[in-house]
Image (tube, rainbow, N blue to C red; front, top):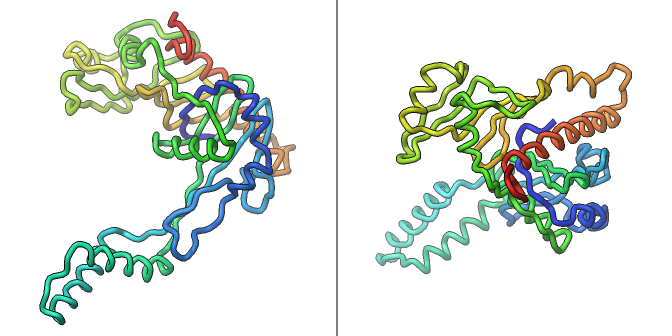
Length: 302
């Protein structure tokens, strides 16, 4: 189950599904960092390292997983080593070490230190929804999402993916909902929001575990603050925090929904994984379709 959601509209999701074959993905299969490489990025099996397949399909969707590995070599450590070597040269030869020589010393330090540096890996999951025409990414930041989009574009040779550009601004709608406006059918207010003053971005109020219809929140709204993040519940099946760029964070699926994918009779881990993915993709398809209608993504706002 995804923890975050950032989605992109695809001009031709069917072509992406057809082109994202095992052979194409295998050309960019993940491999560990070499001795002198600072980072590598490639595709890895969604079902885990013991699996072979680089894709997993179900319910009209194709699941992909990218893995990035990087060597941990802090710049401060490199800078300190360069300073020490430069100081030794200056003491020994009674001269100053210039910028060009410092750059050479830095390259020498990197060559020596990189092979001994620890590595760290992280995975980013995503799926192409051929029915909704979306690329959905489990990423907490724009940078991580864009890295996966770039990798997929390089793998396929082309990828026309657009982040959502809403006609109706999420900040305006979220502010109206908290300010007593009627919420769209299927959505309920949570107990968390972040408010920001449009005239001073440094003026921020973060509220958790509060009644968003209470007087304290109303006071901030009357003072000119707007809602830029808002906790919501969708059909009592999943909850999340909606952000002003239409990304979702802290996505949580209801216990009853998770239970559907974890029936006792489903003993095979692969079958359970498939059930979870199918249920998650179906729920997110409905939610993201609703959001595109509400905010006027890819069309005229209602």
